[in-house]
Amino acid sequence: MATMRAAQFVPLEAYPGADKPWRCLHEPCGQVRTPKLNTVRRNGTACRPCWLAGKGFTEWTAKSAETHFRNHGLEPLQPYPGSSAVPWPARHTVCGRVVAPRLGNVAAGQGPCRECGLEAAHAAQRLDHDEAAALMRIAGLEPLEPFPGVDHPWRCRHARCGGEVSPTYTNTKRGQRGCRPCAAQEASARLLMPEPDARAIMNAADLEPVEPYPGSGKPWRCRHSCGMTVTPTLNNVAQGLGICRYCNSRFPYAGPAMVYLVVDRRAVKIGIAKRDGTRIDEHRRQGWQLAWSVDVPTGDDAYNLEQAVIAWWRDELGLLPAYTRDHMPQSGATETAMWDNAPPDDVLAKVVQLADTLNLPALSPKLTHWHEVRPSVVSTSRPIRAPRRSVVSGQLTLPGL
Image 1 (cartoon, helix red, strand yellow):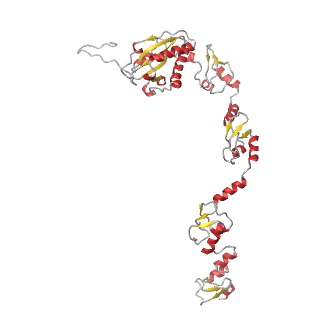
Image 2 (spheres, rainbow, N blue to C red; image 1 turned 30 degrees about the vertical axis):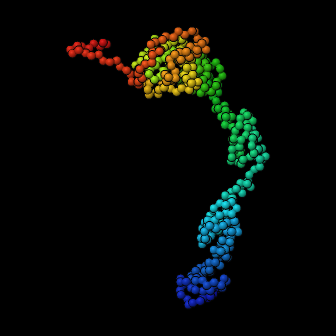
């Protein structure tokens, strides 16, 4: 009892034992409590409200908690949960948002609405237009609209190239240039191989450049040891590819060649080949028929005519290839168009017109039956075999017959 009185507790019943609740009156607050003797010995008190008050904490009631919430612009949507450490749903009367702050946090000085707090912080830290524009101008960017914020795209004009770009203030402050095309050009210039080194690679492949080095992936006009002018890329030459098409191709780019058109029931195909070659026979084995052909002085001329016809189909007429690569194992699917959209007569007339534009000698077309007659069958991906000849019983079949 002496210990309890020293802690300002007045016992209201006989001593029950050191670890049992003992009904007492706590004089400082005038409330009846049930402390344990051992708890009082250990802590010096056993009245939680008084202990909390001594530490600066508040003992909340439902009424005081609701009053505190309303004083901070919060309208409770549920009864007080009984603890200041539990989220309490409420409506923030300033912005109308539904929030769930903790009463203890609000009492400690935290704002009642996180979103409103962020907006206020952003407003306090936001730069004005003139201050932000000054940094952009140092980077060579002239703003075209009011400052939108540090992390929002800001329309500007790049002074160096005159292009319109939309960098953010934050990225510009970090040192980014703000103009991707200009940055790419600068990076290319930094990474570009020195021209003497590039010329050494070409010279090792018997190529003599006749113009400044354009870059490793761009065509570079050179003169090959054979005397012909070619345009390989440095990347290909370094890999031993595409050095001279006149020397390394089976197609006679520098010799006599022809342009031809083969047809089937559905489509037409433009192509080029050397004269008296086997290219037309390859197409016949797949079911194609020769409609016409024209001889041209060189394979270069044939290639230019073929590419011009394909560009006419794709770019001017908007025609798609009639077949896929799987349908044409002999290659050439990208050189096809539907018969109805590109009849043989129309294609031949275009070739004659293009030849005149390219200053080629007058063409003498070689026409076949299929120039006017449409085949009745569609080409196939499998070679067409001639029908087997019947063999009379007892007759020998000789090779080649």
